[in-house]
Amino acid sequence: MTRFSARGAVDFLAVSVAIAAILLVFVNALGLQKASNAARISLPATQKSPPLPAAAPLPQPRPEPGNVRSRTDLLRDVQQELASRGYYDGAVDGAASPRISQAIRDFEITQRLRVTGEASETLLAQIRNAGNKSDITGSVQPSKSVAGNPQILSAQRLLARFGYGSIHVSGTADKETHEAIERFERDHKMPATGEISERLMRELAAFSGGSLD
Image (cartoon, rainbow, N blue to C red; front, side, top):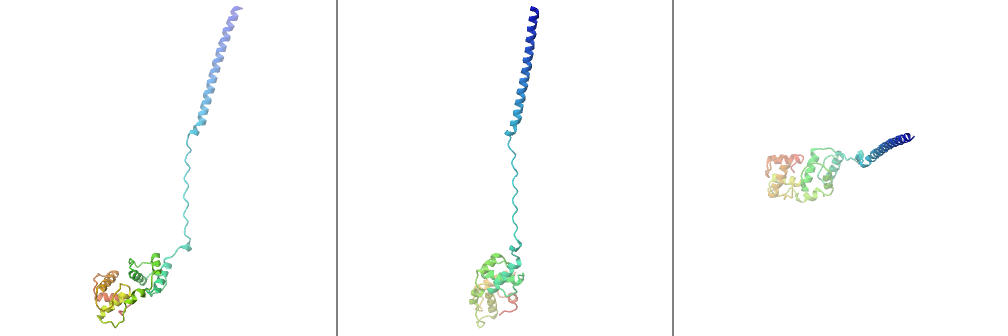
């Protein structure tokens, strides 16, 4: 009986140790699993959210067809304004032509602007702010009875009429006349001599429509 009791106590102790070992393994496994799950749950929170894509720029509004000013309309207005001020005597039709280009150059020369011969909105505003051509050149156009060289007189009259400077129409080729001739020659792609010549008189005649008066 005593041997049996001692043996039973040993068996009970062995079973208890085994049970304790199994419980310890289970507790450790459960603890590791919880820690792993917690790590997996908390990982995304530490990561930064990817940046949102930038918004695409809004398209620029296109001008309505009715608000676009055509080249024809611009030229027509330039023709009208130049004609009303005595610089242009052609058709007011909005069509480009050598005549309107020359009228623009005449205006630019008279107003001491950069000579381009081209219509623009800036030029149109300058024309509208300017006076009549006769207000500038009319005072330098005397009667044909002035004494002097007839050829020089004709050249001076035309140069004054077309705004090439404040010329004293005397029939004498003075400094102002030479400077006016040079400006005219440069505008018409001629050698700038500043002198009265047959070629100059032909160009002046053609420019004035065939008349040297």
